[in-house]
Length: 142
Image (cartoon, rainbow, N blue to C red; front, side, top):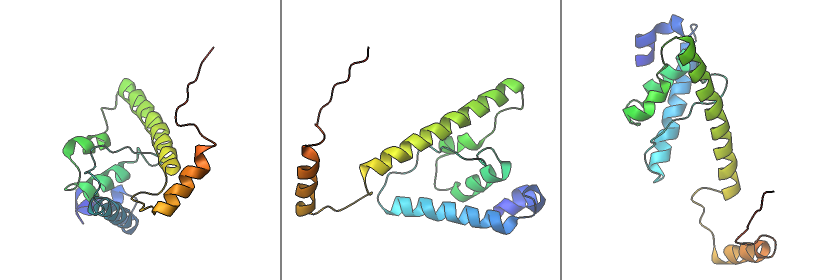
């Protein structure tokens, strides 16, 4: 695996099997995403406690080197170690975490991806929700 050659087993705490599994799962996820007919990934958002971990960033780069554009991979390139850049980096990840959580909540509310809804199911859904939720809504803030 190129990851071990590039950064060495010691750089990841000797847990090369763990990081290899992470890399494999990330790659399988993206390949299945593209096979399902979705557009190519154009942006990556790292979230979670390991988002700034050097091993995680290397694993993502290794897993997606030929599947994602270089500009999308740039999110994994850490800026210089100056205190200003470090502060900007932390702010970016706080924003990315919030954005990722909001996106996941939105997708959860939209329903299953690529769901093939029958006419009977669609009519039942439209009849159920039509009386509860108006199709247009206006909000006023005072």
